[in-house]
Amino acid sequence: MSIDGSTDNRHANACFADIMALSVVELFQSQGCKSCPPVVPMVHEAMNNPNLLLLTYDVTYWDQSSWKDTFGNPQWDQRQRAYVTKWGRSGIFTPQIVVDGVSDGIGARQGEIQEILMKAKSTPNQMTWMVGVEMINAELKITSNRSEAETHDVLIVKYDPMQQEIKIGKGPNKGKKMTNRYLVKEVMKVGEWKGGEAVILLPEMMENRFKRVAIVQAGSGGTILAALKLCVAAMVSC
Image (cartoon, rainbow, N blue to C red):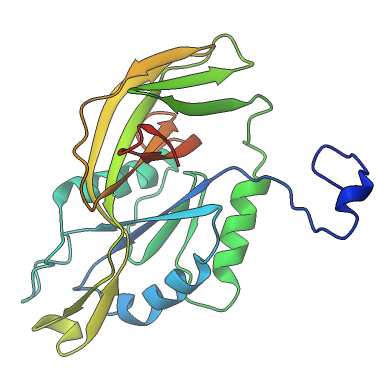
């Protein structure tokens, strides 16, 4: 049976799958955290799914050791702390994966990452209304069946799809190699969505090796309602 429920005999021998929304998996890590080198590869392996987008942020609060994270950015510390504050927690840790801004964990044991992903999909805080995002030429169009909503941020996240391996020279991970994937380079707020339909003019984006994703998020540390990969060259969604 197809997605729309039809039983067209022309497709009797074909397999069909439901279309799932893109989920954003944010990984907060550090080259100065001794727990990261063994866990991060497990996270990478779990991301082999076209419906999942990994975004990696290297934090800097472990830089007080003798090794400074080569990809660290204090802005990513703030992004991680925004989630912790939103959830009313006092502690912060690495590695941490956050799925769609609603569920989190370490991912250190077998099956834990799938549990975090499933929790994000089944959380009782999920909306009963829908939000859609599409890219048309140089504009981002956001639509919803809810005419009014609280103010949400519309973000463009630029990330590097190239895998990079770093040999750590000092600190608790001295001599270890750490593989990095989908390192975030920039998070830019380009507009706001308050319900209904909104059209946002996108800033000029250079065509280079970096990729981009548009995210609609309920403020700092809030739920990610929708995400869309952007193809800059064609100025359309991927």
